[in-house]
Image (cartoon, rainbow, N blue to C red; front, top):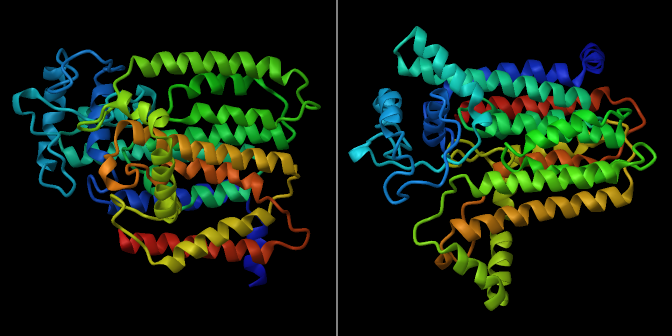
Length: 424
């Protein structure tokens, strides 16, 4: 036992992640059937588009039939090969191409989130016509990039163990190895938040990479909002932080708005966005009740599905493993010696709450039917990065030997990943 404890103490968190992330990432990748990850069919179509240099999908075209009238033949030619997947579970009729009319809800997503999978598709298509090999190659390229980005994030952040545990959540690895855009998006979010925390709580004072990452973040899904965490950086470290942040944030917000307003966004059937906006002013009590009811009924689902709920969220583990895994995440806050002010903790709690609220507002405006009595569409996997920001809120370093604690935490993580493998 002492040898195991000493060995664990010597290991760096980023190296632990690289080993376990690679091991279980590859395992999950090969044992997870095609389209078993949520929304993979739509992500595959977008990856096919990007592999054929369809970089941006704007709002032109007939939304009722086909948003890309000038690109239908090209996409049909390059996606038709995957029609053998049409009988697979969760097939959503995306590959029928009846009258070349199709729609997929990832059409407006930035090309940058699909670069690894599209490169994997293109390279493998030169080597083989086997669609399964092409599909799993695309997954592998996503996995490799996700591993590299997350490794860098754990290496630069002061909250190494909390980032490590969050990166090894079954849900995080599951998304990381998939064709989903969430794979690259999560990796970039890890790096971005990790770098901001290195400025705020580490020895780093080089602000130039932050500026670059912030401008790039507008091409990712929801990551730009995390630029607000730069306000945590103390003035004593970067005296002109507001002169840097305010123009940068304004420029990023403008660019984000321009990009969003010119990109396709999925609107649910029979949803009138303008009418939904009016509800905030004409029926505020109804809207408040709707949101309160949603959070009362969905809070546990959001938490569980951000940690461990696989497939199309139908692979649900027993409650005890999930609780143990979240406990491991919480007590991992004892392993990193980082001083966090009370005001910073309050600011992060407010930021996390606002992020969840805004995400739910988006689905209220664009997707959820009102007759449900709650807002549907929001999933916990969208909130995985919030576990990273929450690391600063619960930070409380332990001053004694942490070897046994590290071994205990890693044991819980590994057992959960083995359990997840059996569930898949």
